[in-house]
Length: 312
Image (cartoon, rainbow, N blue to C red):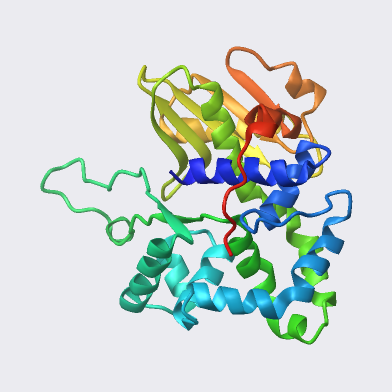
């Protein structure tokens, strides 16, 4: 459901604004997705942020307050989820919440449709001896589900705007833009990862997908792990960086698969700027490579895409 909504927003953003290429489409969508704005994508993203968000801070802040019932618990939790590892328990700790008030805030935000749970596929640890006990550090380890934001703009607000709210309200934007310049690629990576999963599943549409999403446990994290009915496993990693991916990334993914004890039918790498010549030569039956331009496949017949209702 979450990925369907994200794809609808992605297509709606394109139908409204028609960016000149897919790199810009992804980059701008990661910030403005869900707002329903018509923006001039020929302008620099910093100019558009200032024009549409920073200079409208008070209006947008009021709308965010209304969405969250002006609850400090909800807003602290959203901020913790935006900047952290998205795990629920660590977000509670970061936000200074306990299981009671944190759980209440989490439930409200889910019901409001601002976030959605991403359930862990990790199996609980068990002793090989039926009567044996696990080591203390293993026994105390808690499997934690994660959270995804249903609208990119909400995550952008709590990732970048909320931490600089006081200065922005005074019309002082310098600190915000310094922070944005440093962390924009890191921020965009999650939206790129979510869209990459959609693109991967689009190419697997002729086979039945049993499960798909990110995978994490105490030792390994994989951006995308998709399992199909014919028992094939597809493992993907996504890199939204300004340089080409080289062969070392393929080795890192292979090491993760070895730790998990799986043999993928195919490894897939998604890149903002493409791949080194050495890595490109490896592409074949066991390796697929996608970069930003390939996301055009999600926008077939763009004139037919409907404009969905904005967040507010």
